[in-house]
View 1 (cartoon, rainbow, N blue to C red):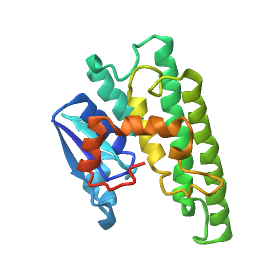
View 2: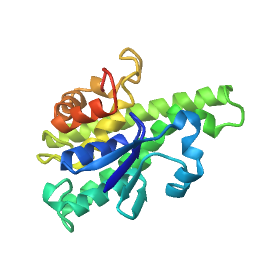
View 3: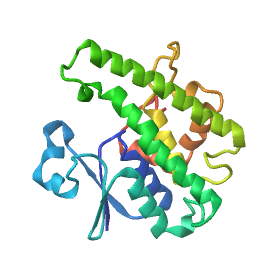
Length: 220
């Protein structure tokens, strides 16, 4: 049995979407992070970093969102959620997957948790870090928009839906409360990202995830 340890609207949404796209039987284990579950001995035994998500696939335990999604794709190749191994398309998919997790997601984490990078929470330094990270996020969203404009396809890699679409959607969702009138607008306000995100949201698997996680609009 596959079990996904998750919390709503976190990075766990990415493998959650992938599991729904694959149509696999699986269990969802919601982590009670408000009451310290991430630091419990039981959870730390699964992920010593105390982060979400974790996937259990039989006796295999995986953490790190990209690794979980690649595992699901590789063990269910008929779904074609990644291009074929050894192709140029696969290489580009690897590039963007690493960029999403190491560049965009990492910058969003700095924006949402600037106190992790300062000695004094609430200081001017914390506010500056948050502002700089938000500007950087804006530039990275522009990069996503430019990539969609470049190839003109309906999905992030072009004509074929992939696990990259689950990842892009989830990270873009995290910007939904950015003010449309601020210098750094939410992802949905960009000319190519906006319609693209709606296409992803219209997929039945994505709608099931929103319901499963008990989320309310705005979804993105």
